[in-house]
Image 1 (cartoon, one colour):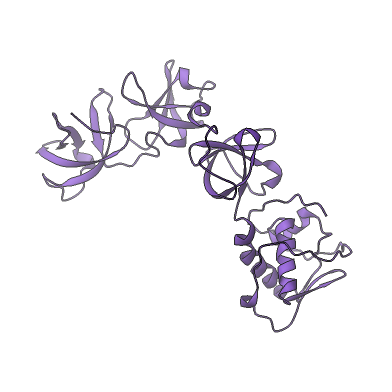
Image 2 (cartoon, rainbow, N blue to C red; image 1 turned 90 degrees about the vertical axis):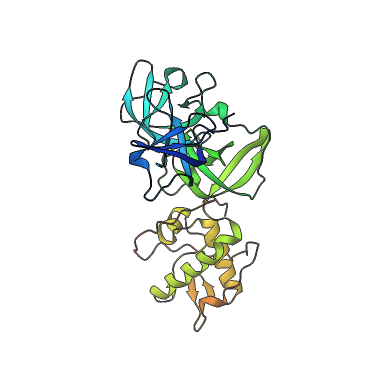
Length: 321
């Protein structure tokens, strides 16, 4: 009996050679690896990794091409053909990936990019795709906890923010007021974490580094900016979150935490109108702590150096003073 996983990569032995390619051993008649996809030097008896799927004549075929997604994956794919039965997506292989009309949330348009999950159709045994991802993910039994690093993919936009797929199995939300960079549907965000688990296992997701992990970079950035602006910057805890992010490329919370650590480490002084770098203090001596240090309240100064905003992402910009 064949144990081939259709829609996935399989490690297979080369059974025999023909004029138009090689046949892979599947325990039966064999699966053809067309000549155009045969790697140089391949010999009968060798074992190689090939992707297996059905061709246009509904025959299993092998390829060394790598698809954009395989069975079980969620990916943003482009529509290359639209018919009355469904749409075909470019997934990186010779034969396009089919999305039946019944598996579309709305009529797909030619050239559009849609987030779909690749699956194996139970009736036909062929690889297909569906837009109905909500049925494929669940928060009933969570595999993550607060503080866990996760990989997320942007699913859709909502009134509150961006709904994301967490680790390919759960659904989460990134709030709009915590996004300071452009993100798009289908985008993978490698650096994310579970901020909070709310009632009914709803996940609040933060992007970027979290807490202590980020402080080292932010502290170093503040010191470097101080050095490049005459050792003084007119920013403090009365500065607005938008002004802080535009200049430093970080949230107000991260700024306050870093300034507090720099102050406690005696690397800076906090003055009435801003922060000042103390002399002869190397960046390497910055001390990292796990709690936010309270910064003395200072009077806001409207004057600020004009610099190009940083491209770094921010988190937790809404901070109560």
